[in-house]
Image 1 (cartoon, rainbow, N blue to C red):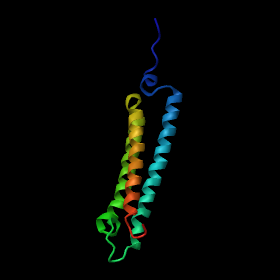
Image 2: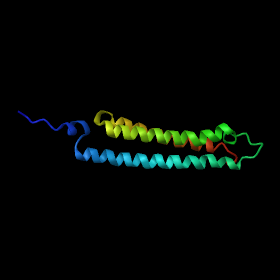
Image 3: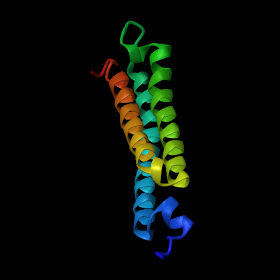
Image 4: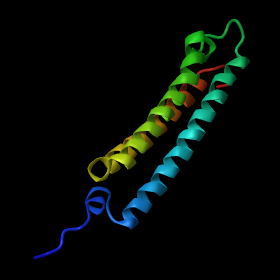
Length: 120
């Protein structure tokens, strides 16, 4: 009779797989933190707007979108990455990949909105 592996190994993987997922989570949290920090600079670029500028960033809505979309995407990506790491093997990689994708999409959205200002 073949011995069964421990439940922790079947749920979370081998120690090497666990270490890899922790490194991927750390990278995701670092990228999400940088994205959230950059959202402040995206919103601050609206200070260059004058009263006759018509770009999206020069409106109140555009300034709020430039601030909250990247920060919200980064926060949601961090939650997805941590949930994927804690839940275990079947959902680990899809949730970590979704976190990375969401972080990049949030950053690019904020960057595109910031580029509609007068400096562009």
